[in-house]
Length: 258
Image (tube, rainbow, N blue to C red; front, top):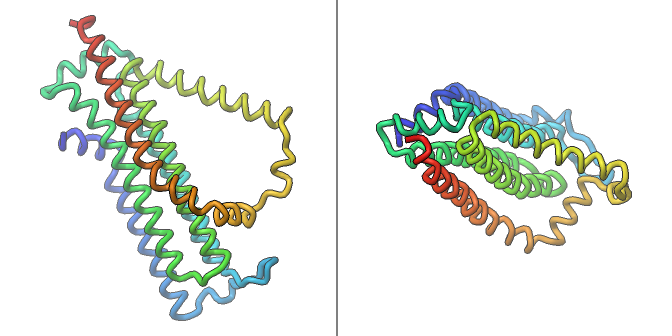
């Protein structure tokens, strides 16, 4: 199992990615410390419509967190298809049977590796949020970081579940068919979005802004806390279910390739 995980880690150039993320994190923390000690970024202070003083560098760090979430989930999603090397399911089965390990171990390694990637991403996002909150005065920006932490958890949970379904599709149907299924679902979702933009009620977005979102989160803090506690367990349960379904389906198909 360890060898398979390291092979996947090396195939996505994991050392370079981790080195880059650590270096950028150190730079951000250093700039935060320098800014607090020397008032280096005081020239970036502005006043919002509510009369609160906001530093544009704090806003930049908040945007970097979202950039990390979007970029991280995007890269991991691309790795899912890259980790399955064969296009057709027959070749995949022959590959499983030629390995000196059980095919269940090979399949599990894919799910474990992608799960670890999302865990590292979520941990890094929380580290950035905690560091940012430590140097931000109470007010709008702290509320923004609170909202960011909640939505980052839910986004990564959804992304993990989608990746679990994708792994199952690639291993069961092959990479080409799995990619076709993924593209078809994305296009279907895009059709629904376009249809809503043409025929739906867009008035609900007329007065939407960040402050309204923060107020909604504060008003539903208990529901948010409950969802943040429960959603990771539900996601992990469904993710494991994807693995079990994949194993069962491939076990039933195995006699066809003997």
